[in-house]
Image 1 (cartoon, rainbow, N blue to C red):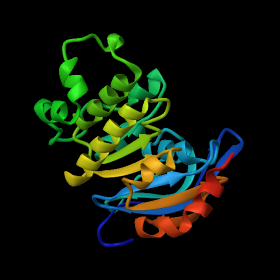
Image 2 (image 1 turned 90 degrees about the vertical axis):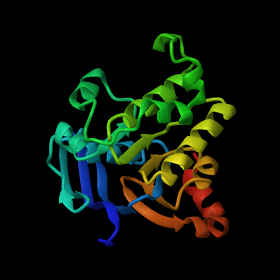
Image 3 (image 1 turned 180 degrees about the horizontal axis):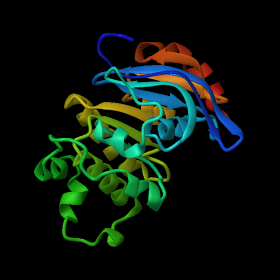
Length: 228
């Protein structure tokens, strides 16, 4: 494990019932980095995030956050260590994750400065927000928790380009503030502008990794991995 590693995943295997979904995931994230998991639908990216959060119960391997082993811990314990997930969780799964995990959550004024759209709509009911604004609201909620490691699962899926650009600007600002981000994203060109490193996932394992400096020379290979 590198001295400044925030998250380390080693030989992670996971199952949904009898169906195996993860086949030995290996990667790590340094503190303050933005790192992506890239791959086709069904590759195991979202399952990896669920495993980190403790939402995938049947698993083996190592998940270390700041040196502490989390594999086998319950979701509420993982969340209280300072990890938050943006994903399409069920109601039950959302209720398992506490609203505040640590001191130091972002102040409301700071959050509204990050999300001008929400500042303009701050008195509107959540049900009246657009799809993009609801995505922003969901990310804003996790910034209130005090978490320092953010797991973002397809935050731009189905959004208009102007909203995608705004979310990209938010992630860049979060990196400047020292947050660590693990980003699952189908839109590689979006992710490439933000991430320090990329891990390509196939069949529940990492098959290749790229640094930001490697992307220009490896973009054809990356797009081959992502091609349906």
